Length: 280
Image (tube, rainbow, N blue to C red; front, side):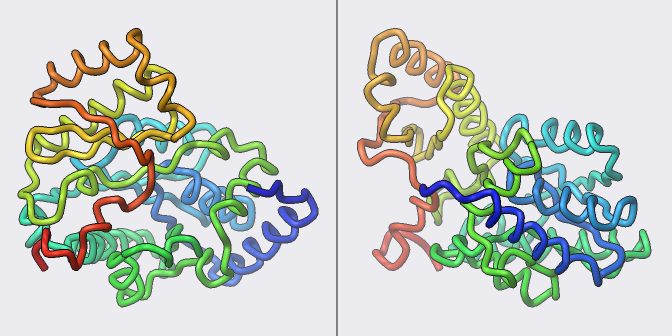
């Protein structure tokens, strides 16, 4: 990506803070990723203790994300409310149709809105950015229907701009790889189980612990399809990496372990929508 100038990052940060300021008190949907971290910190800079974090505790949260979110709030003294969400209690979640993200986001943000109201807060903010509009994102529809506020979308802020602003503020998450709900590792139409979520989450943790940053482990029946940054493919196939990964994933319950030669890309499970391989 083209490096963003400091002046432009400062300008975009001012715009973000000015957008947030009129709300007075806000609750930010906070996962611990770079998008929600910058949004929360900008709100905290502008509103102080009138900015709070709402974090969901769910089976679909990638390994380590909950700890990252807690540590971030503790580091900066930001109030955080952790809300337990039973995703398997959400109608249609485990059946995993193509509208799964819509129904799940609807349930999640309804809980966030109710929690914010109990805190006397009317404005709930979330961190979808301008780049998210380029993929199949039914969750955005649910967020819009509920009246949740998306500052980055309103200001047309891109992922690169978010990282630049986070770097400007010296937030150590500025180069953190994008995370996503673990359910996105399972093809639409395949039933979601706790075991499948555990397998994919632990598999990704095993690989990231070996020094790989952008990693997805997609589950096809009992086959693991590993997506990595293309620049990491050559290193991965060396025996000192490939064999331990294979053994580790076999121990987790995968029958076969494969490497996707195209590499990491967000929303790769969406590539099959409309091609007869998923349920609507």
